[in-house]
Amino acid sequence: MSRDVIERFGSRQWTLRRLTQFADRGRGRCPSHARRTPVETGRRRVGDNGPVVDKSLWARKIEAEPEHSRRFLQRFRDMAASGQDIAGEARFVDTMAPRGARIFDAGCGSGRTGGPLARLGHSVVGVDVDPVLIDAAKEDYPGATWLVGDLAELEVGFLAAAGAPERFDIAVAAGNVMPFLAPSTRREVLSRLRSVLAPAGRAAVGFGAGRGYPFDEFFEDVAATGWEAQATFRGWNLLPFDAESEFLVAVLAPSVPGRSGGRSRGAFGAPLRDAHTQPTTRPRPSAGSDPMGGNTLRPLH
Ligand SMILES: C[S@@+](CC[C@H](N)C(=O)[O-])C[C@H]1O[C@@H](n2cnc3c(N)ncnc32)[C@H](O)[C@@H]1O
Image 1: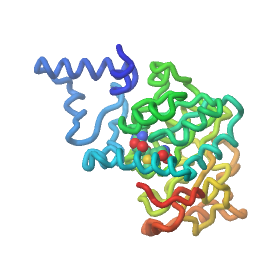
Image 2: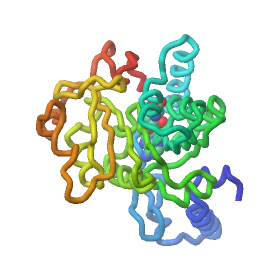
Image 3: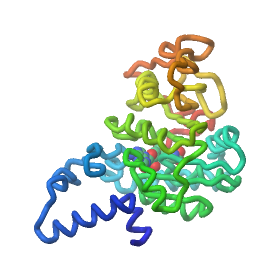
């Protein structure tokens, strides 16, 4: 089975199942769960008994506006060509990582974070649901492994089928990946990210306020999926997070049962829930603010 086919559909096991379904449909047969795997509703079943996952908001956006990916890609390429800094997140992650680390770039887009990390000698795997951006990542940063896939379906078999490491020292989700997940899959994605992490692994997750995923809900999801926040910042430049912050960068680690750890206290010793609470109606930051969290970029998406 070619790697392209596996990339389109996911793991080898999943691919075989999907191809069988397509063949069945061609013969006029439709397995019962295939009837519930429809493009029209945007929901599909993961595995035989797995959850039915909603399509990511990004996937819905590019369905409605097919040129969105290319515009997004071009803006980053233009910025890089004009010498602007698009690698603040990569520097942050490099500081967290041992040399030659296994790094998982979740929602990697066109590879602007994982790509520079691969050039620094790390072993990088990026997964993104957008095939246009994955093609660009392959072109611009050939030193890493780039895979089309939905993070809500991430599993070790999918990584193994691509010859990628199955466990990672660091996972990163930069540039508003979290608000672009289907809201119903947020906990699933956090759990799956945790499941591909090495025991002492950590994750860095950054996203902006006013994008439909309030920070307090994020921290509830973090706690519910076996993570704890070890540190919080208002940008990838390490400025401290507070209740007014328009961006959050959270360093997460698997929680240790019986230890309250970093999850109970936030910036300046304030109870974490208070420090991280953001009103759901918080407006999206204005064009002149710093939505990329320390890179002083204008909003791109
Ligand atoms: C704003 S872009 C950021 C891309 C990249 N991390 C960056 O900082 O340049 C958000 C990315 O999240 C990806 N994404 C959203 N939901 C996803 C999902 N469920 N699985 C995989 N990728 C997803 C999108 O395809 C998109 O590339």
